[in-house]
Length: 337
Image 1 (tube, rainbow, N blue to C red):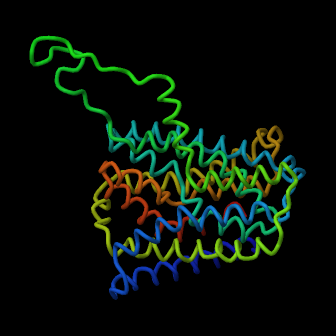
Image 2: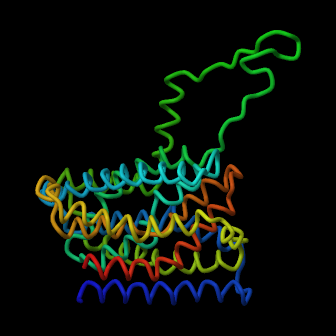
Image 3: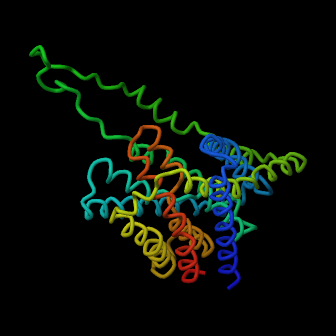
């Protein structure tokens, strides 16, 4: 009951902070401009600082060697999530952009806003290194496959690959390998991933960050959780998210992603012969099962919004799944903890 009580306590705190954010916007203390600024501050400063400060605080190379199984478990989780929701999108006959955004919304959980505080509360001794190692795989997949799923499907231009208006064929130049490689690398140039890489470099080099510097960094990073939930609460008051409630795939997807999948993943990793083959402790398996059941990552709504690719659909998944997580995480925790 100890760890389960920690999860329930975290969820009650999450609900209160969501309500504060919703109330502030409804009372017109601030609006969309302030929310956009909060989002930018979270993604570019608070979450990277939170991950960095927790990762380098007392962690050494021996910790990395002892916990590298977290990276393997994260890769296994994402492979199974991608396969499961590709098949589910096909079974539900979700095609084109709708099918892709559906997959992105259910593959990528909100590890930054909700997962990190849960992990740190459950595993105060190992949570920081778990977060750092998980983030390497998480960010790599998000900024490649996640971006791909959120991009609109390119439509062939008139005459492309066929007859042009003047009767001649139009050749569409393909980007060079160098330009495609550069584009892929640019996706990794984001503060969260850079923060993880700097932290790992310092740990591998045996460099200790002085407490005089770590203390203010911890204070700054500690702002990430309340601000992220206040931000999400504000989105409820400013977004036409309710249109997603008419989509049948919402209910099927949330049940599969936030209840069936994390419990099934835990059973696969802890109760089958596979458990003896993986370099993972029971705490790592619990951690990855909880991460698998997190609500939709807020960044997915940002990715779709910047290309006007069904942004309200994605935002609806973020908001509804966040509310549903207050129940689903308690249910999952009661089974696996």
